[in-house]
Length: 243
Image (cartoon, rainbow, N blue to C red):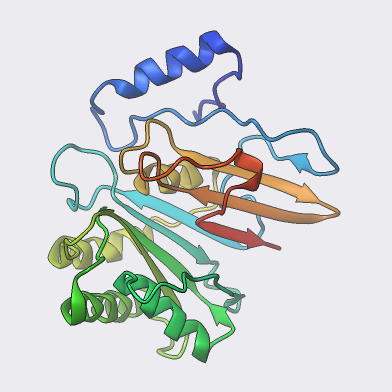
């Protein structure tokens, strides 16, 4: 049974943070952030996450990429295999110094306007890793294609978060991909598992879903101590999916 988001009251928020401060004892032992989206023409979808938009599946699991602890560290958000790839677009930094996954995704979307899935790992940012880091991206996409049994021309996008200057632990990642793909689902629990897997120093997982004029928007976000973000409603989403 999936627990709903914590109450926005101060007492509930305090208890949530206190619970999060403890060392996780299982892959998904971290509370969800309270939903603080202001009233507007949109409708907040209760229990929503990246699976709220029809046709999208998600999964999260512990693949052994983190330096320590049991918390999940691999997330996958994908279009249902029975459907064609989804329309895809990206907004990228203009900085010449960017992580290998940023370069990989930019090049992928220069060639394709659609994508089959987004693979996210936590533990290593794969930033400042040079040509070897980019080669890890290419191998990750190749192995994910194999796990999906998807056509080689379908774009797969990659995101990494964690320690800068560290390459991805490729063997644990590659070994985890078949199970990650096999475990894809469309439930609130599947969405929650993906949201937890992309956290790093975050005290809570962050995801939400809205419906606006019949269109569903799903959000998945990571990062916490790296920057001070503006209010949730204006945050850039790590994944925005619509139907």
